[in-house]
Length: 161
Image (tube, rainbow, N blue to C red; front, side, top):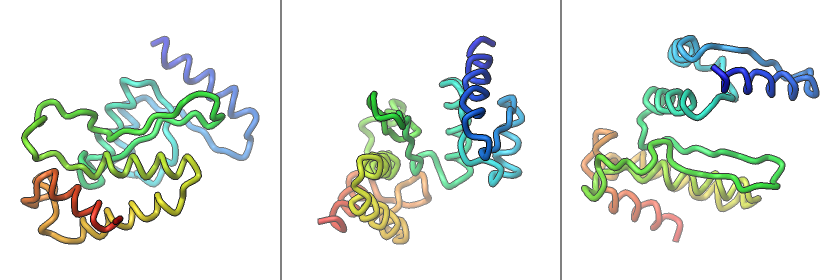
C-alpha cells in the first residue's frame, strides 16, 4: 500500500529529530487488537484517513460511544488550518431525528479553543459536558438516556451562560 509506505517514511524521518520519542509500526488489524486489549499502549496514532477512520470509530466505541468522541486534525506548525469535528461526522443515518448526541461536536469546539490558546474557555466547556453527562436525565439515547439532541446541547450551553 503506497499510503502506508508514505506514513512510515515520514514518521521515520521526523522521529530521527526526536530520539526520545518512542515509535512503533503496527498493521491496522494489530492496532485494533491492542486498542481493545492494551489501550494504554497508544498516545498518538499516525495513519492515513481510511485506517484512521476505522481506528477512531473503534476507540470511540470502547470509551463510551461514538457520540462522545471529538477529534482534531492539527497542523502544529500553524501555517495551515487545523480541523475539529466529532468522530462520527455528520451521521446522515439519524439526521433530523433529534437523537444525535451533541457532545462530540461540542467537545471538538473545546479542542479548537484549546488549540487557539483559549484554555480557560475550553476547560469550562469540558466541565459543563462532564456535569451534564453525570445527570442521567440529560443523556442521549446512545448513552442509555432519553434526552434529545437539543435538550442535551441546551443543558451544556446553560452551564456556560
